[in-house]
Amino acid sequence: MVKRLLMVGLLVVCMASIASAVTVGKVTLPDSITIAGENLVLNGAGIREKRVVLVNVDIYAAGLYLKSKTTDAQAIIDADESMALKIQIISSLISSERFVEAAVVGFEEATGGNTASIQKEIDMFLSVFAEEIKPDDVFDIQYVKGVGTKVYKNGKAEPEVVVAGMPIKKALFGIWLAPRTEKAMQNLGKDLLGIAGK
Image 1 (cartoon, one colour):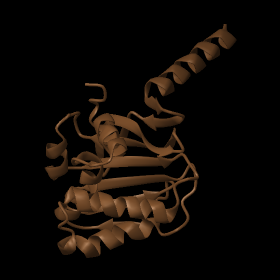
Image 2 (spheres, helix red, strand yellow):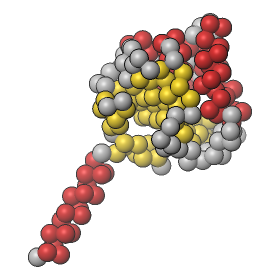
Image 3 (cartoon, rainbow, N blue to C red):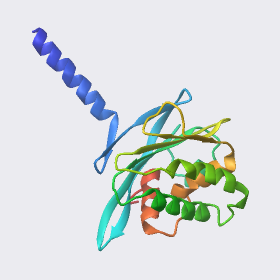
């Protein structure tokens, strides 16, 4: 009887952990996280793909966490409230240099080319990616109202950097949510908004 109860208990725990996570490709993302004492829910998740010799290669998985779900990209970009992006590297094709290059293009497109006023903040953010990037590296980009954008790497307790200001926050989340010229980023943006295929 005790053995049966233990088995049932173990099954319930396993089912609960499965229910509280979302799998994107081969990456499992939690369906909610807590930052600065606030619970955030997974708004959407997707894979950043790269076309390599006629084949789509999975580069990284990303999940967007908000206080409440929405499909309004501009509202998310403009909101002065806690939110987060979780990025897990999948492919060895993404190097530090390539990630930074892609982020620079993203900042340019998200701001309409008006990066001069936040260049110092952009440089602070990009400094996190100066070290070698490897498959399974996880970056947590968390905006906390009144504090700024914190970037954590591989679950460390302390952030690699804290970048203050709404302009950099808006540009940063705009990399994934603002209109982009590259189809792969357009698709990922839809996934993060939970509107893929709509």
